[in-house]
Length: 173
Image (cartoon, rainbow, N blue to C red; front, side, top):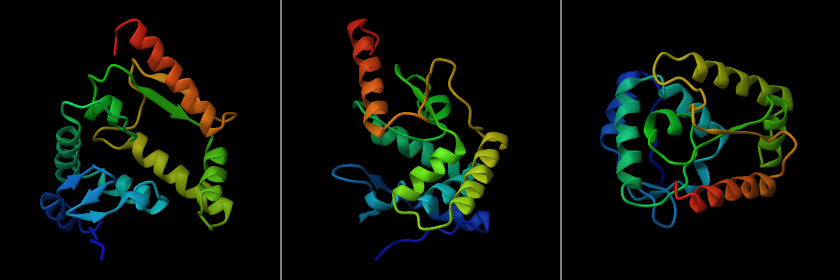
């Protein structure tokens, strides 16, 4: 069984979040249920963007992210991690790609919707996340900006690994 957290009304989303307990050993679990395969899905991204406008949802989840990563090395992906959740992180990347490239990548990873529908949803999410009053989307001032339109996932990972290795050799990580 899965646990559904309502997006609307805002009070229901906020109330549901207060009972959440995440674990990240061998996958991502919420209250004991494995959500690893769903975390990066389009519906999860849209839902995160919608409830991300609510301070009563955002602040407890940010605290939970900090709890999960305390005293450990980690890699995390998210739209406010480098600016709000982990601003002290010694290495940050802001990964970009055109909306068209992102839409084709999403389709290649299993999204069966028409490309124009995916593009539209991505544009809506980007605008909502960049213009929200609470923790808007923008690159951290010390983030390495990676434009990935012409890069494979392997090339992106290699560029990141190279940067982290350079930081380690300078003892900044």
